Image 1 (tube, helix red, strand yellow):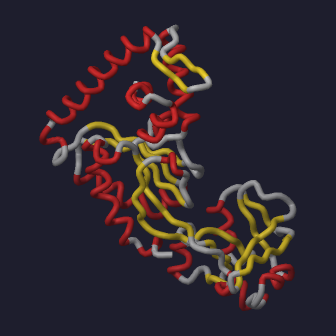
Image 2: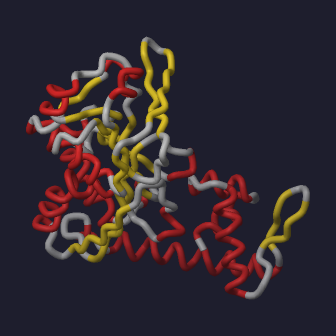
Image 3: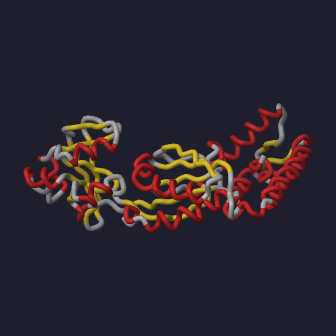
Length: 294
């Protein structure tokens, strides 16, 4: 209904998409799903754009009243900002959840006992509106249609190994030296892995044959900490091992640029109070975490 209302108010799919900060394709899918649900055509499409059908005009007026009523209902809950209640759904990468976010989430639930958190692990960029997600923590650059974003830090790709392994096999001084080392990879990488680097502004890459392939980054980091070889991961994923000295970073002069870490959400200042309260609580804590300082 919000997507259809935005198109009805703006007069075009593209303008409605900009109003919601979504892609035009996403708005088209949402309106098409609404038309399918209602079994009628709300928008008349032509080479010149779109206009409301007779049914669309009547439904647009009803939508406007309903959405306005929702806004008024939320605004009437004056104390909700200080005492939020209900459920908040969020997504974030697995190792970001385990190693950084979990203690912050526990503090949040202690501070707001009437709130519930539903956390899903997701490595890719979610679709907030379609997937029913309130807040997502994402790593990397964002498309323009992803929603409102709050930067919370930076992480960087690192190559690391245990001090014991490096003492036995030597410290690589250049990417090409990795061919003489035992390589540990994670995820869906195949029998040959290409690791990319940047040195003095120029990209470089080296193709490697892994000695050990693990199904998860957590397993690869653990294997490296046991002295089985070198692995590549993001700095926050191995933060505990790097801080304790179990792992040591190599080839820092060839490191790829850091990646931004951001919290994304919908509707900006119009976001529900439970979302705003959550952001006010977690953003300064994430920004203060040493694992997100790149």
